[in-house]
Length: 229
Figure (cartoon, rainbow, N blue to C red):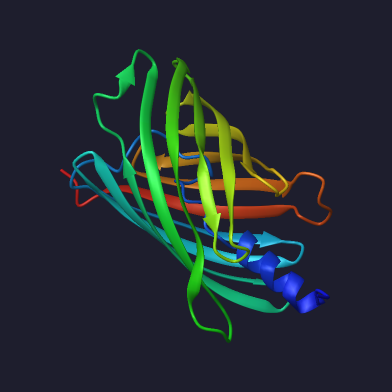
């Protein structure tokens, strides 16, 4: 069957507008939660050559778990889509081994490509490892699988990030986000803590490896410890 240009653009819009399922400013998840009975709110705007969007992402901690949500609206080549994701992260305190911490996360997303109705977009789960390499250096690794409900395929996923925190107010990172059968996404970014560990502003830049006109920039914020002690 012949594939039309609108169909290609629609598939591209849905796939690239799926939220990252992670805390700002990284797309790679870390083995940590918002904290028991504490909440957080993250948000960011994204802009690229043909892509524009914004995302709001609240989350709250319940014991060793974190329940998070994301809502996003994006447009690419005149096509508009809305996305919603619910995710549950589990990071038990006993899953630590020296400088290594472990956890797991599961998520489910739905998408609404206007003017169509909401439908399932992606769901999956992955294991998380965080490694405190040195006082100012940390690495994060995610390995798992995701079911793409649009094309009906299950793909392996893998994310890796290196984070440098030279000062309590500054964080810098580089990461690679990979999904089977798709180009890897390469990101770099920084965060400046206006109030350390409470409220920060961040900037990121990223591109899909080997894909022309795929560079995107984001500006966002993170507000943590809401309703906490």
